[in-house]
Length: 150
Image (cartoon, rainbow, N blue to C red):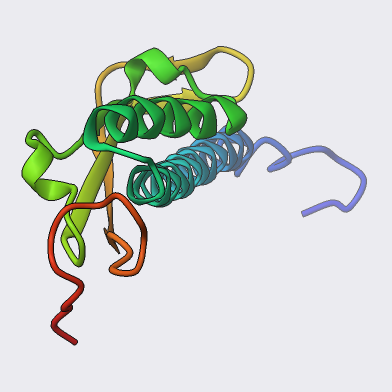
């Protein structure tokens, strides 16, 4: 073998496209993982804010409207479309009594593939978060007796 010729120089060149492919796939995995984390943080914050807003409202009807608005505002603050969020609120006014535990769930769909500039593609899964709050037993004008269990 002569050190001055180019023989054998091409061998192994296929590793460059393979390395680029691995880099692109790795970058997509990181982007998708971050999208899932970001949506989970958004729905967790939205559920917490909606539950707190509901239990601080003067009545059930106002609480439902305010909690819905609060959850959608938090989703929008996380740069997500509030119309895609689903907020599960207490259905009856029986939830709005002293010491009642109120549970609010917020759901948001996560796309199957998230690209940094293009956005989300496909349907992946739904991120959900639930937050519980207790209606304050010492508030005025709230029905029920002020006796809470633990």
